[in-house]
Length: 263
Image 1 (cartoon, rainbow, N blue to C red):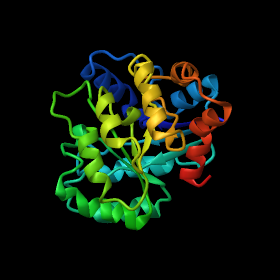
Image 2: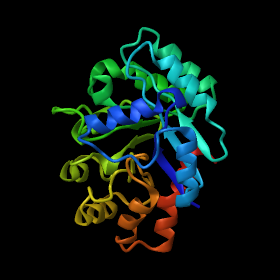
Image 3: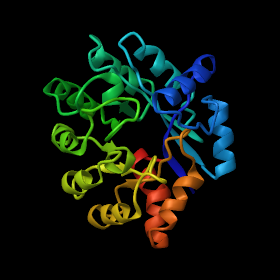
């Protein structure tokens, strides 16, 4: 089984514009789907992905309700599990977190740079406490983002501070942080945080991937791609080069995610 813990898609009406805008902002990244739900499912079928976790982002306060309605509409809990999102500065953010739970979504995605905050800002503590109270999973974009200049809001040194405010599972995407390998080793490895492997192929040096796995272990590593930007075969090429045992590979590709998601 293969569970992709980090994918993206959009409502059909805006998918094309969303993918084009994100691609341009990130320097022309090549998308491997058209950004639609059906495009994601077609790629899953061709790539051997059994279940995709779709991570949605609310980039402003007015958007969050529609984002979460879309997330709920595609959350079939068979081959697709969708996470909601809240905009941290929204006046009804805590109520929207409760609605995410009521909609049956298993988690929340934050992107500090798209949403304009730092993960260790004290203003986030009430949100994290509410998320923990609701038993939701939190996924953070971590490290650099090619669509934004520094400083970045989700670097490992900030992430480890934010982690102390949670009593529910936290996932740092992109091996703990895009272009943050030394800091991931220093601050995150060995802590109670999950790391996903998304956007690792051609970006994560094999040396650092091995060091991270050695220090953090494989029981809190989640396979992810960041589709539409990377695909499962791309990320599997990196993992296959790391001399993992069959048991370790099974943990990364599906067993850890099954345990975390309760499926």
